[in-house]
Amino acid sequence: MKQTKVVQIGCGKMSKYTMRYVMEKGGKVLAGFDINEKIIGKDIKVVMGGKKDFGVTIYDIANLEKMLKKLKPDVAIVTTVSLFKDCYDVLMTCAKCGVNAITTCEEAFYPANSAKKMTAEIDRVAKENNCTITGSGYQDFSWGSLITNMAGTTHNVKKIVGKSSYNVEDYGIALARAHGAGLTMKEFERDVASADDVTDAVRKKMIDKGEFLPSYMWNVNGWLCEYLGLTVVSQTQKCIPHKAKEDIYSSTLDMTIKKGRATGMSAVVTTTTKEGITLETQCIGKVYSKDEFDSNEWTIEGEPTTTVVVNRPATVEMTCASIVNRIPDLIKAEAGYVPTCRMGDMKYQFKI
Image 1 (spheres, rainbow, N blue to C red):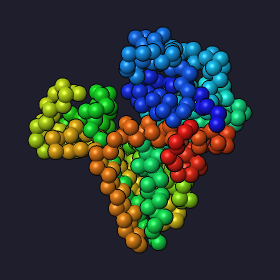
Image 2: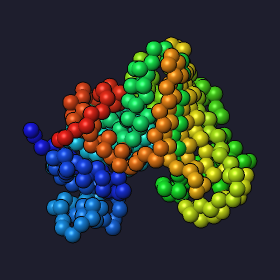
Image 3: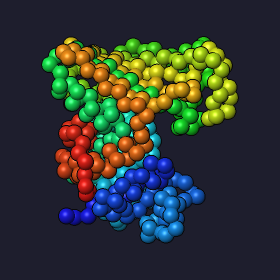
């Protein structure tokens, strides 16, 4: 079996797992790329830990195209940002160089319904250069095939309801602020909720221009609808604040959030379909109280109604394992921008 050659783009927290998982499943990491001057030029040991060098250098991402042409990897793993427009240049570079790429970018899971033009451009270039670009991660199973397989055990599906929560304290100040943590209700309405108070026509224009900012579930609903063969009639997004029931300290914001202020928010996405099935999904990001923890809960309403709850999921490890286990599917897939809903369910891979 040919050894799969991989480059790692983004050498932060996630890469510590993805690179190790690649090597432990028989793949070869050729190089890393990053923007952090403190690690550029150094061995990936600075990320992986340990006493011995791995013989793998981290390069400046400015040299990505040059190095991809030189190294000729089979796959690029991209663990950098959450919005498609922010990883567009890197994915396009991979497409131009004919390198298959898979990213943890949440919007990249199904970008066609939020960044239509950019997705089409990468799709065209990837086809011209016979490679595949896709997005995967935690949502591939936990918000994807888990739900489609539940639907497969249901005679008559009427509604799909999903809810996944995470502690913004774990992801830094930018994400905490983006979720409205610490704001008064009036400030939340002005600074956060108002962005979604637009007509369908205006939202469509924003999507066509690549200016729309989707919540994580916006793209998940698109993925689920394609996999299940559902025709989307309408889709809306609404941000709802979570109020502090008592004063709560945020180490990330370095402030005490007073009772009645926002600890974060739920981003609720509602999708109606021609087939009569409604999807109502939400991701909840907030500063947790001491008795709260991450959870993932989905219900298929119909005959029969089924609910699955996963408490305290190991989100980072599950994300990275999903990326690496998807590599054989990525390599075998048709050329273009291909969401994983067209690759079938994930499988455990002994070797990649």
